[in-house]
Image (tube, rainbow, N blue to C red):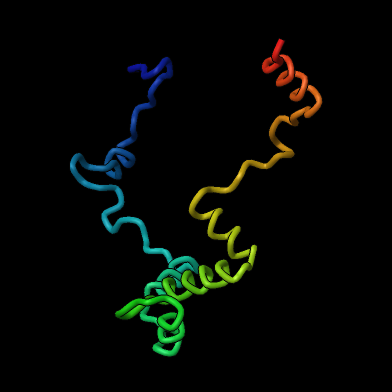
Length: 127
């Protein structure tokens, strides 16, 4: 029997040979079945949609803009408006999305401030 990667390859029975895929033909001609609409897809569809005129007018009174807006745009403008009025949750949301989230201090190396001060003192002494 021929060997492939150190293993013996079994001979195919006539039944198995008949069911074997033919060259140039896909084993899955219909392709992968479509998934049902998931929450993320539905949310993205809603967010891409045209925002109600009432919301657009409210945002236009805050931000000078012309033309229609998507729901996503109205929501993000509302977050920006809250941040401009001092809402720190909105500020953190925007900075996390634009600058990236800061590394968690608990998981990073702890800095010994006394040791750091001694190092700085030694490097910058005026002797």
